[in-house]
Length: 128
Image (cartoon, rainbow, N blue to C red; front, side, top):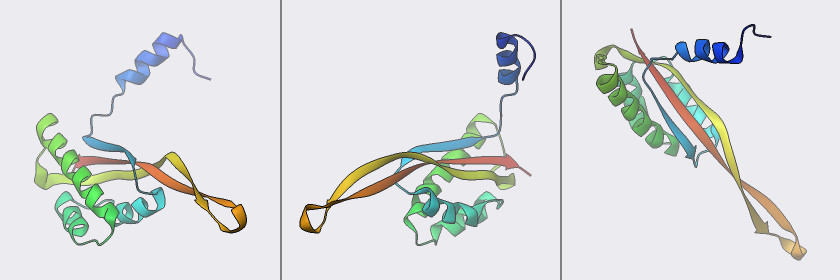
């Protein structure tokens, strides 16, 4: 257990702010598993290579992640004054979001549940 007063612990935790440029997209209508296929392809690559991979990837998730990566690059250039040519993808991950539950009618009056899954996608950049 942490030692110190609650306000002191909060102050120390907030002092360690992450200054890396990032972008987050919440409640995307893409299952986490399908988003991770695309994210695994670009993790650790520099941004120009990652944009090229996303441009020619046929999956729907790649178009959404490409927009998110463009946003993260713009955040790095405008907010952190970083050079675009030195940027690379340090972290990218997808987390589970809420699930929309729907009902599909089946034979003999039965009903099957359909779960439409959502995800939160995050991309964190850094300079080499």
